[in-house]
Structure formats: structure tokens, C-alpha cells
Length: 304
Image (spheres, rainbow, N blue to C red):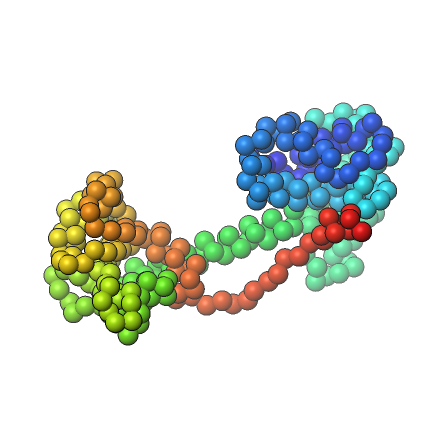
């Protein structure tokens, strides 16, 4: 687990206490070792997250007058930074800054009331209790986007549950086409048949020679697709090698094993996967707005 930016402040100050100038990412190896992040940072996204949190920690140390930004990407500890180390805090909670350095209450960066007064429309980094956030702004945005995504997925799931079986079959065929698995003019939901029949046919090629058979089961939560249902679907796939079994519920382990063992190519898609695919491919949802998140390219400036 990558530590939040406030957990990085003390390790950065301890690295800086030798008093010499240092590049902002020089402490990264010690931080990785201190927090046992060796395995985490093998993933480039995790490494970038760590660097982003370090950059945010530097912003707070600079605005707290604990580090001096002496050159492009280079910092040096000052008297306040050394005083923080002398205070020897075991951690620096959100309320710690203004309690120990009252002058920060008069700065816009640390005082939410000043920011609100100067710019009523700006979003405050701090809440009404004057506490610092635990994550960088871009991570807060990502968390918000994930919250909205989860809300959309939940709405999709609820909307699908009130469809008729016939509507669900049409949705499934449409989704596979949107995902690139079929041609509209040769793909369709079949005429209504008894359970075990083929609910849809998706044609992969222009002439309709290569087909994917589709079984769509609109089940309420709690009901799972068992092995016999998958076997029945496979049995109905005469002269067709590829099939997709889609349900709003889940598959039992035996059903999953059955699909893996069969010589035909059987894809099993459960309720969570349906909404995830719909979200990913923009099927049945609207894009309200798009945003770009930008940051300074520090490497560019360092190499000037």
C-alpha cells in the first residue's frame, strides 16, 4: 500500500537533514525501502503514484516554510525544517501544522477560511475542521470518478433487472456488436424458444458464415447458473464453435469448469461483467462531460 502524502513528509525531512541541496526524487529509494514498497513500485502506475504523492508532500513542506526550493527540482532544508525534526513527532496528523506553527493560519495555503474569502468558487483543499487531505488533488479526482462510475454501474444493474427477457436478449446482442464481435446486418435475437435454445446469433463476418451463438439468462440476484444449464447451451450449439453465455447473476464453479473443459469456445459473462463492458464501450450510457488532468513536466524543466 503506497503511503499517503502526509506519511512521506517526515522521511523527506530526515533525508534532507544533512543540509545539502538534493533533487526531489533522491529520497525515493529510502522511502521505498522504509515502507517496504519494492514489489509495489515494480508497477509503473504505482511508481508514478508515489512520485505524485512525493510532489504533493514537497508542496506542503515548501508552503510551510520547511524546505527551500533552491533550483529547478532541487530543495534544501531550512531552520523550520530542522525544528520539525527537533520536535520529533512520530507522525504529522492533519491538525499538526497550525497547532505547532501558528503563522500558517495566516497563509492561504493552510487556512481554508482565507481561501474561501479570496475565492468563493474555488474548491478547498481543507475541510471545515482545517484538516489537510490525505491524498493529492489528482487522486481525489480519481476517487470521485470511481465513485461516479460505481454509481453508474449500480444504475445499469438496476435498469437491466427490470427488462423483459426479450429486451435483455436484444441488449446482449447489441452489446456484443458494440464490442466488435459482430455485424449488425447479420446479427439478431432469435424467435422466442424454451430455455436451452439459442437466444441470439451474432455474425462475425460480412457474409454471416462465422457465427457466435448467444444464451441470455435474466436472473435475479441469488440465483446462479449451474453446470446443467451450460451443458444444455453447449448441446444446442450444433455446427457452431463459438458461444457466449450471459447472465445477470453468476456462474457456479462447476459451470465455469464445464465451459473450460468443452472443446467449443465458450465465454461466460456474469452480471458484473455486463455492466463493466457497457460502461467501457459506452453502451446504454451517456457521456456528460470530459476533463483533462494536467501536471507540470518536471523532467522537461530539469533538462533545460
